[in-house]
Amino acid sequence: MSARETIQAWLAPRRDEMEAFLATLVNLDSGSHDKAGVDAVGEAILAFLGEDGIAVERSAVSDCGDVLRAAIPGAEGAGPALLLGHRDTVFPKGTARDRPFSKHGDLGFGPGVADMKGGLVVTCFLLRAFARASEPPPFPIVALFTGDEEIGSGTGRPFIEAEARHARAVFNLEPGRVSGNVVTARKGGLTLTIEARGKAAHAGVNHADGASAIDCLARKIVRLHGLTDYASGITANVGVITGGVSTNTVAPLASAGLDLRYTSLDQVEPLVAAVAAIVAAEDGVGTSATFRRESGFLPMEARWSGDLMDRYRAQAARLGFTVAGEFTGGCSDAGFTASLGVPTLCGLGPVGGKAHTDAEFCRLDTLVPRAQALAGAILSLAED
Image: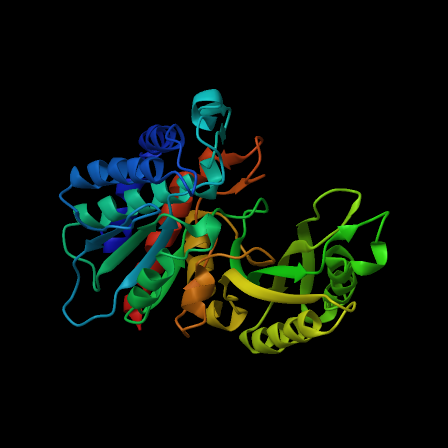
């Protein structure tokens, strides 16, 4: 049999094992700020890969989960295929205890079951399949398991970009769409904090002596929301506001959290410049405002996914299922690699939905075929 057939044959009967490993990972709390929990998921991955002697390097991170790099050696001098996955979830500590992995028919439930512990399972089984093959792959297979994607990949991004610069292709195992599709394009996003300052005064005794930071901020929010342009894919949303001291005090301080989304790299700087102009404008005598960037993701533009999508679709057809590419407004680490000009495909994990909610689910019947299709797509890169 060919390498593709050998690997796919090894994966074929692994559903029960994949489900068991998924339950293990889901039952470990790993919220982004729970370093111990995220690292516990890492330990489970280390132990699992260690059963086949797969080499894993660990890079310590102080505030978030450590970064793990697993590698299957391949031909010398050949650029690797890079697999991406994050171990953190959005759920607080104790969620796994209160709502552990459960199964109903072909659906699995639990915190992070789709986003993205299902993808971690597929990655680990792929690595073991390649490790067990009778001959090494035509190029190295490298997998990064990061620990802070849900809060912007502040620590993970440098590792991802460093690996991607040498990669021939990147495959991000975020959950497959509910439709069964994979992701061929994503928006980029920025989170900004805007702070307004004014002057406190008693709202009844000397109202005229005050300068309201809340009033200043409110006027700016109207114009910030005006940056939304659906035709070009730009949205601006202030989702959080805070400020003031009491109802009978003219507010000396106020702040807002702004989410910006965009579809291409060339939109970023003009959009930030427009925000800067709005924030700098005077909106009330005695008030002022500043802003700072908190976190951000780059867009995954469709031009970097086309070839990989064709390869994946062809492998899926061989296995008897159909798949298409899909655009999403959500962000992921795939934007960092695509923005470097590296061919990138996303949403390659098992099909799932309702991520970040108590109803999050994973279609367990897609664990094996999605792993098989990805194995075939990776090996097809050697045909060029």
